[in-house]
Length: 115
Image (cartoon, rainbow, N blue to C red; front, side):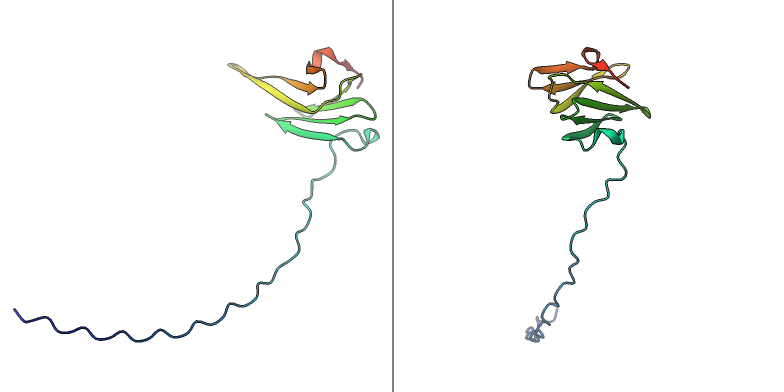
């Protein structure tokens, strides 16, 4: 067996080029699309969706719009100020949504349907 030869010294690295400035574009607002609720209600204070059901709350009009399966229903919320929604899952599918107000949980069956 031949003895090991000495290693050759490494060549020095070439200097790196400096990074070029990034071409930044200002962020564009997201397109939320056309409102799905009736236009006469104005802008909601809160809106969202859960399990295919959309909702929007309009405190000045005291109305809650709910869209489920393409059907929009508007409810009179009375003294309730809706702030959120939850939906219990059931074995056969999704349950009815429950809305949260300053007075506690509210079922849609407790609200008067207006449209």
